[in-house]
Length: 271
Image 1 (cartoon, rainbow, N blue to C red):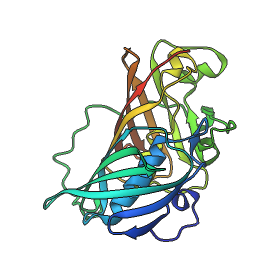
Image 2 (image 1 turned 90 degrees about the vertical axis):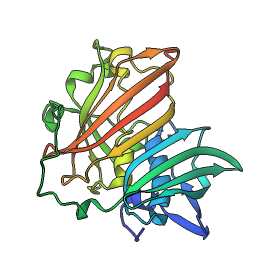
Image 3 (image 1 turned 60 degrees about the horizontal axis):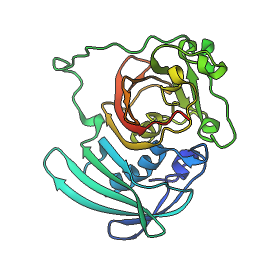
C-alpha cells in the first residue's frame, strides 16, 4: 500500500518480514468500547492478502474471531489455498503473543475497473436501496469515550431507528442510515469491510443498548466500489435464540448501486 495521509490507511500499515508473513500494529482509532472494531481487523487481514494476491480486488472476505484482539503489535501469516483463472483464494491468521486471534479467508478477482459495464442484461435487483431520511434529519452518533470509531467515521442513523438513545424502542431490530469517513477518504475494499461493521448492532433499536454482542463470524461480499463518498446502509436482525443472533447488511452508494452485502453472527446477552 502506498503512503497515505489518511488515518485509516496508516492504521492498515504492514511490514513484510518474510514470505507470506507481515508485522502490523493494531490501532485504537477504530474501537468499540475499547475493543478494535471487527471490520477494521478484517480490513488489516484483507490488506495483507490483497498485497500477495495475483488478483487485485477483494470480492469475499470472511473472518472467524477466535479470541479477543487488543491494540498493539500483531503478526499476520498467510497461505494461498486456491488459484484459478477467475479467483485467487487466501487464508490469513492474526496472531498476538503467540495466540491465534482471528482466522480469515479472502477471495480475490480481477479489478472491478476491468469489467465491461455496457451489458447489464444479467443485472437484477429484487430489493431497493433503503428508504432514508435526508442526512441533515438523521442523528449523528457522537464520539463516546472508548468508541473511537465514531471519531473517525460519520454515522448518521435514520430517526425511525435511533430512539434507543433516549429509551424509545421499536418492534423491529433494524438500523439504517448514512456513513462516510470524517476525513472524506473514499471507500475501497478494505474500507467497505470497516463500514459493514461500523453501525451499532440493530438489536439496540428493539432491545436497548444490551450488554454484550461480540462477533463470532463476519463475512462481506463486495459487488462494486462506490462512486460516492457517502454510503446508504441497512442492517437487520430477525432471530435471537440460544444466545446467538444474525445481522444481515446492505451497503449502497448514492447512485443506488449495490456495493456490498454482509452477514454477521454474534453472541447475545441482554444483561
